[in-house]
Image (cartoon, rainbow, N blue to C red; front, side, top):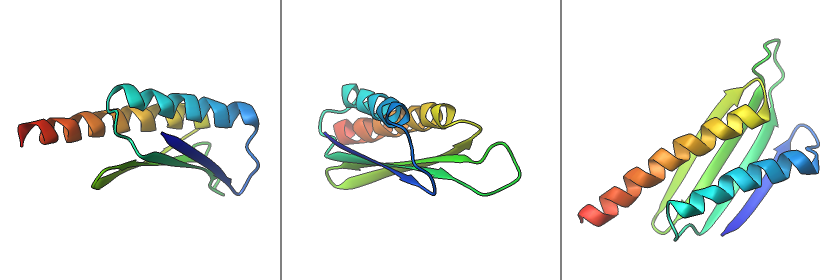
Length: 99
């Protein structure tokens, strides 16, 4: 599984990038045929504290799953994103097995 992480509007440190990649890498235990993952870390210019955005796109054979979460920290947004993707992957896998 190929994981690409990009930071937009700021320079992410290696610890943050590796945190996101480790979290995303855990999705492999729910579905073996994940082709690749693209994740984007963004800082939105606003007055609110919840200005950290994590977008993750999971590439599956025949389908792409996407999630976007906004929170006060990248770690929290990444956790929420991975959990949402886990639910999407389980649902997709159930659809495959029902056919």
